[in-house]
Image 1 (cartoon, one colour):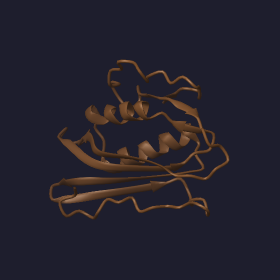
Image 2 (cartoon, one colour; image 1 turned 45 degrees about the horizontal axis):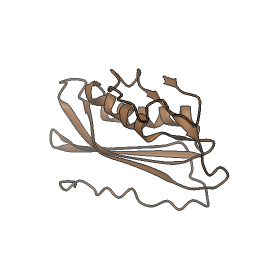
Image 3 (cartoon, rainbow, N blue to C red; image 1 turned 135 degrees about the vertical axis):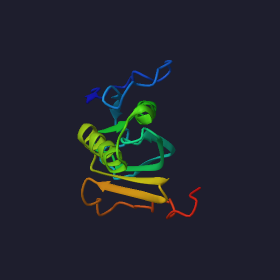
Image 4 (tube, rainbow, N blue to C red; image 1 turned 30 degrees about the vertical axis):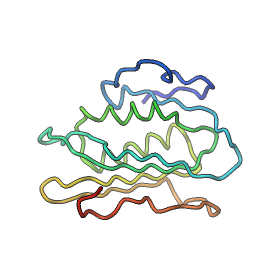
Length: 155
């Protein structure tokens, strides 16, 4: 897992950047939190996330929602997009993929709090939803619902 020390100049913005070959090869950029000392929520929604089934190599689709409360850094959105896109050719069970994304972001960014919801579309007739969080959310945090309905043809 590579990460870039926070800087004011992200390495991917404004550049033609190919998709990383794998999640392990993906580099996430972090920049200084523009509002240090404040408690606020950042949400990324990736409604078209894809990875591959580790048994059949067939595509799996999910709607990911990543919420976090920054501490010293925020993740640069283009690098996050490239990281998430690198899963298109990655074989992994829903649980491993969802939790692995949350754990990596938490370990590298060290936010005050982070949670991820992976709302996976059915394979074999069963939708699987996977949730992980780094601990209890800050008491003074406004925490909206992730907004993804239980499966009834999500969308």
